[in-house]
Length: 252
Image (cartoon, rainbow, N blue to C red; front, side, top):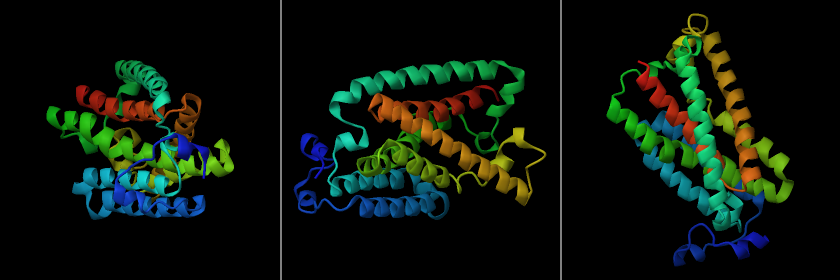
């Protein structure tokens, strides 16, 4: 059993769950994690879109349970108590950097149109507030960071080291965005007219989104490694998504 499992309290802790504890091989835990993420992705993008928030929260709890089942603890998912302060400082700095970058992009005419998105054109102030304060942090960031920079990264890190953990979790993070990115070619006016409405355009834009998010995943993993906290990539992830909604709303 890893030393971290004895030093850190495990995710969860109810008596019934303790009876299920069996430090299973990391490979089995990774396989179960990937299966859970495939089902969650299908539920959120195809089967039950209106239930995406509770589905994501339930999946997050299940992911923490998988890490616990594999003998891991809070440190393995990047949430050790003694690193939370450093993670918060990293997160605050990254949020400020993204905010400054978005403000500059919004002020320049040739980058302002990048914030336009047909999927969000009808959102009111309350809708934007819901997404920024609830849906993005708890329905998107929490699930994806716990899944890819927390559980998957932590499981592979224990066996293969940081490089393998980064490449594996980032590749899956890119594939995670296949379904959400299928409508990107028509939703982003900045991509018209070359990509909108064609199969080739949809495929190229979706492939580009997968590659971009995989590269972003590598950055998020490095932030976790350098800060030793999951809060650092969480802060950057929230800022890029939530502040984008705010800018898009203000620039309409």
